[in-house]
Image 1: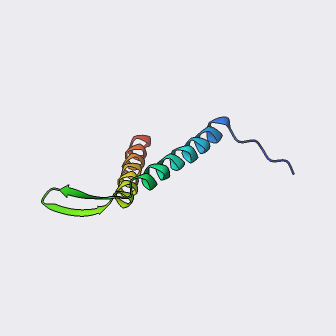
Image 2 (image 1 turned 30 degrees about the horizontal axis):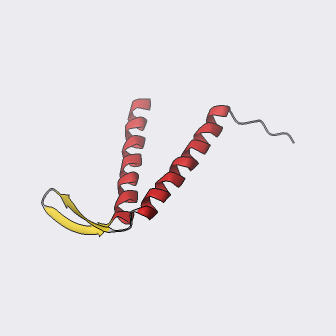
Length: 72
């Protein structure tokens, strides 16, 4: 059984995603203090360690949704 090699672009994207994930985790760990978040009429305090992954996730979701719409 021989397996077909993956295209180089898939491998590069995989490693780039891993590097970006590691960098994101480092930033999150280094920013654990609490901060005040103001959104429209609400003010609330939360840890940057929670805020950063939340914003990262919202950014990825937005990019995925916009990319999905463009691909159609």
